[in-house]
Each structure stands twice: as C-alpha cells, then as structure tokens.
Image 1 (cartoon, rainbow, N blue to C red):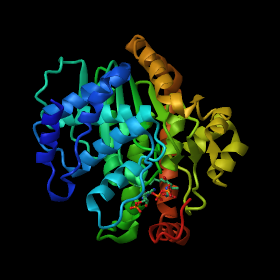
Image 2: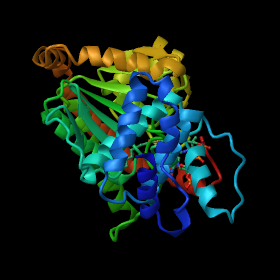
Image 3: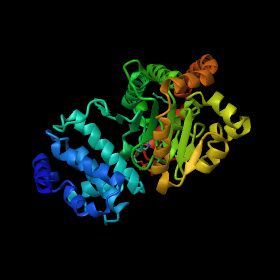
Image 4: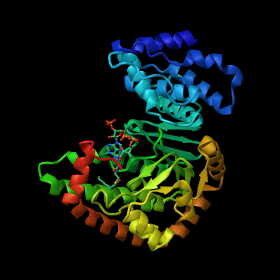
Length: 392
Ligand SMILES: CCCCCC/C=C/C(=O)SCCNC(=O)CCNC(=O)[C@H](O)C(C)(C)COP(=O)(O)OP(=O)(O)OC[C@H]1O[C@@H](n2cnc3c(N)ncnc32)[C@H](O)[C@@H]1OP(=O)(O)O
C-alpha cells in the first residue's frame, strides 16, 4: 500500500520535484508508537493515497514539510546548495516551519489532507455530516468537525500576513460559520506565526484612481472585515499559536476567548508604521487593560509576551508551547458539547449592548487610517519594509 502511494506521488511530481516522495513509507515503520493523534495522522496518510488528482507541487511540499516536522521536529539538515533544486525546495518548505511543535505539525498535516480530500474528490467514504471540510479557499484551511468550525490562516511562508484575498476569505468563512451547525468557531494560524498582520504588499497594488482611491478602498475593506467580527453570533475563540502583529492583535478584543502559546507575542507597532489603531482596539484595549497600558501598546508599540498579555486581560490563558494544542483542544471540544443556543444567547446578552458603539468606533478608526495611509510616515515605513530596509 505504501509503495502504491509512493508511486502515485511519483506520477504526480513533474520534473524538478520528482524525488519528493510521500512520507507514508516511514509512517508504517512507526505504527508501534501510535497514540490517538498518531492514529489521525495515519488516517490522513491513507486519505492521501485516495486522492484522485495531483494537488500540485506547493501542496506536496507542504505535506512533506509537515510530515518531517511532525516526526523529526525542526529542520536539522544542512541547507542544500542553490543548484540542488529539489532538496532546496524541500529544505525551504521544512525550514519555514521554524520551531512549530511536532503535535501542531501533525494536526496541520491532518487538516491539510482533510481540506484536500474534499477539494480533490477523495474516493473514500466519509460518513455524512461528521467531518466537513470547506473548499474554495486559497489562503485558509477551514474544517468543521465535532461542533467546531476551525479557520486556519494558511500562508505560513509569509508568516500568515493578511493579503486582500485573505481578508475576503476570512469574511466568507465567518459568514459560513455563523450559519453552519457548529457551536463554536476558532481562528488560528498555520506555521510558526499566528499572523504578521496586514500584508504590506497590499499597499503596492495601486488602482487607476491612484493612492487616494487605494486608501478609500482599503478603508471600506477594513471596515467590513472588522464588522464581521463585531457581528459574529457564536462564541469565537482565538488559538494564538505564535507571534501576532498588527490587526491580528487588535481584533482579539472582539473575540470571546483568547488562548495563547507561551511562544506567542502581541505587537501593535502602529506609530512605527505611521499608522493608527484599528480593529476597535482604541476602544476595546482601553476597556480591557486601561488607558496607560493600552497607550504603551497602541501608541508606543510595546510588544507583550503571552504572560503579559494574559496579566492585562487581552489573553484568557497561556499554555506551554509543548502542550498547547493538546490542552486547548481538550477545552474546546468540551465547550463544543454545551447547548449551542444557550451559548449563542449568552454571547448576545454579554455583547449586544456594545455592538452599536463598536461599529461607530470601527467607522472612525477606518476613516482616520484612510488619511494615515496617505501620509509620508506611512508610505516611508511600507517602502522601507518592502525594500528590506526594516523589520519590526
Ligand atoms: C486592506 C488594508 C487593511 C489594513 C489594516 C491595518 C493593519 C495594520 C497592521 O496589521 S500593521 C502590521 C503590519 N505588519 C508588519 O509590519 C510586519 C512586517 N513583517 C516583519 O516585520 C517581519 O516579517 C516579521 C517580524 C513579522 C518576521 O520576521 P522574520 O522572522 O525575520 O521573517 P521574514 O521577515 O523573513 O518573513 C518571511 C516572509 O514573510 C514576509 N512577510 C512577513 N510579514 C509580512 C507582512 N506583514 N507583509 C508582507 N510580507 C510579510 C516577508 O517579507 C518574507 O517574505 P520573503 O520570504 O522575503 O518573500
């Protein structure tokens, strides 16, 4: 069976990636050490064998990298030479995962295979209604299982920077999650980052109307995006698997629960970028941590550790990175078993009186930002990042 999968993989792989073999073979050697999640992992390997279409080199590299990370940990091989194209591509894919814990890699592997299984017409028989994967997302992985819809930001090579497509896809996924039969919704990131915030290349695609039109369109998009979080009707949980920057931090004030790995950091460097706060943080952060602490973050760009963010109320609980996924998902699975209508109505009672205020704050923040994006301070910061002169 393993050899058949390997042959299939070989058939899929065109020229320069031909030696990327699927890690099914090694998996069979590890059967003895199987745990519950190891079982899921093996099921995922079997799913791969049932795919009828080639998922493409990018996906195959992701599968390879996640397998290596899940079984061997962070990339420990010397970097291949520039002319060794195949091994360099594999090494790059693995190395991009940084210090992603083995358990997370295993989970991400399972999620990736699940999303492929639906989109590439798996021939396996999946019991209807037990484990649905949404297709048609380029920048996300979306799964719905056991009462939990999980939205995973999936641009790990770009530290899950949110490009225009991802803004739209997150809105679409949230709208779908608000209507599906899941009880709770989770947002998390694939790879070593939760998200590096707004993709700074968003500012480079200038329409015929020039930078003013770009700023206007961006403000409209941002307002709609944040509005989806304000209005989201079910319990919304952030599983912050690694560092979070910019808008991925500010919208946390609109989540109901925020769980963080102790590897996560929280950074809103708006002044450094010539920008101003969004995601309703100019209101929610003040309520959560008081004006002085909020000012340190939002005006002076102080980066918080997960422990500090928890002490200040932005984060609900922090877990050691090594047990993060296990501990968090145990909790989430228990929450998902609670009566869904009671949870939705309780959220409504807690949040509804603030909604109008939040929409007004959102509108004001977007209008201020629309001006900021046209400032020299902002344009210089973006140019400096894009010309590799500065990072956070
Ligand atoms: C519609 C518009 C709405 C706007 C809403 C307003 C939102 C505001 C914000 O979110 S402000 C925050 C913006 N984010 C940043 O300024 C982060 C910029 N990134 C960095 O400083 C660094 O990349 C880092 C500290 C996050 C990580 O550093 P490091 O570990 O050294 O990794 P790399 O820099 O090599 O990154 C790998 C790869 O990812 C690309 N990348 C990372 N972050 C972004 C980003 N925010 N935008 C675009 N690209 C990003 C980086 O360029 C590398 O790409 P490459 O491999 O070189 O192709």
